[in-house]
Amino acid sequence: MKKKMVVASMALVLVLGACGNADETNQNDPETGEAAPGSGAIDHGVDENKVGFSMSGDKVEEATDVPKEDKEEILAAFDNYIETLNNQDVEGYLTTLSTKGYDLEEERQATVEMLENSTMKRETDNETIVKYSGDSAQLFSTLKTTFTDIETEVENTHEGRQVTVFNKEDGAWKVFSIHFIGDEPVKE
Image 1: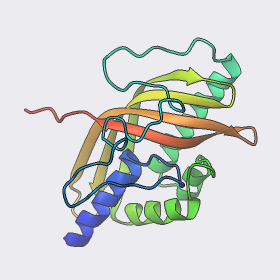
Image 2: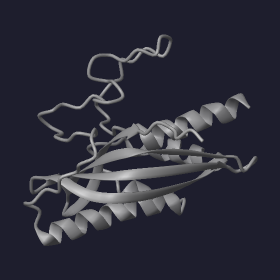
Image 3: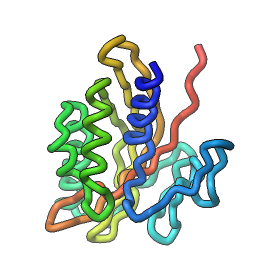
C-alpha cells in the first residue's frame, strides 16, 4: 500500500506540478509543508518577467497578436501533449517536451513508473493562448485529470487550471513548463 501511495504521489507531481525547468531546484520543506519564497502553490516559482499570466479570477483574455498558423500549431501541439499520455504513449509524450525545459530521461522514468500502476485520462476545456511572442506562447486551459489504479480500479480525480508554456524549438512547438493550480473539491 505504501508503494502505491508513493507512486500516486509521484504521478500527481508529474502531471500537476511539473514546472519542467531542469535547472530549477526546489527549496520546499516536506517536514513542515512550507514553501520557499517564490515556490508557493499559486505563484509556483513564476518569474513575472518570464511568465505573464494570472490563474485567479474567471476571465481569460486571449492574446490578439497570434498569427493564425502559429495558433493552429500551438493548439495541435497541446492536443498531442494531452493525448499521448491519455493513450499511454510514453515515447510520443516525450517528443512533445522541450529538451531545454525537461530532463527527458528523468521524465521517461517517472512516466513509465506512473503508468505501470495506473491509467490516466486528461480532459481539457477553454484552451486559450494568453501570451505570445513569436517563439514562446502560453496556453491557458481548465484541466480534469483522472487516475485509475490498475489493481484496485479506484479513481482519483483532480480539477484545476493550467498554463502550459510552449517554446518553438527546431520549428516545432514544445512544452517548456506547466503551471497548475487545483480547484477545491466540490462537497456533495
